Image (cartoon, rainbow over all chains, first blue to last red; front, side, top):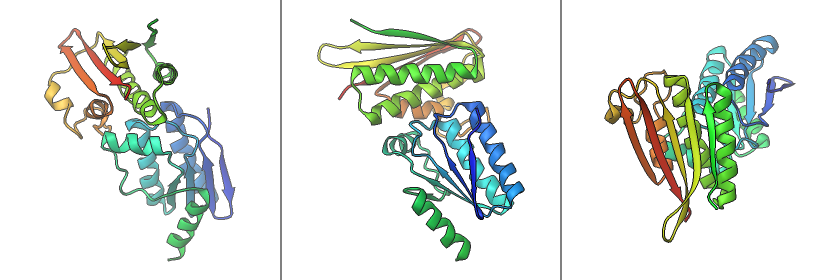
Length: 118
Length: 133
């Protein structure tokens, strides 16, 4: 299974619509980095509105995507994390402190614009 | 009637199957969305540990009832290498697999009851219960 990655000007938009299994998560990580490289993208929004569960493995993969993209020179914002998912992550002791987040796709794009212009 | 489901874990797909079965049963028992996420996440961590460290094993989920409360029990069992130092695997950040080291201590916090029974070279059984509030 592949997660579709859309290009919008300098940005990549990704809406994760399935609960991620390990293989899909790792494939996704690779696809995002390839796409950043191909398109010369400056920013990425990963929308997690439809994701109902993030365990420690998926959290690590997402955190790593942010770090890896930063290394390449692109900023990543995670958006739309559900209340139940946020509560579960904090219960688990996974705060994802360093990861930029926003409430929804729209605010995620605004945040990217601010970070890239500021 | 008590509902019971077994999921064999011998591939990454087993992790997904266990997760889905867990969410379904949690919903049927009447857990809210936050507890459904907690239970599903706990199952995912336990199933992944089985796959990662023992290659194969089983997740059993069932409805449980006490005199005045109902809940859901997860039993994760394998015949893998066992856990050498149970105290250490319950420390936040301890990992032997390059992960976040959040798995087992996380499961303990997500659930209401948690018990590890592990014997070196013979296997591990982890039992966790979440009660309906």
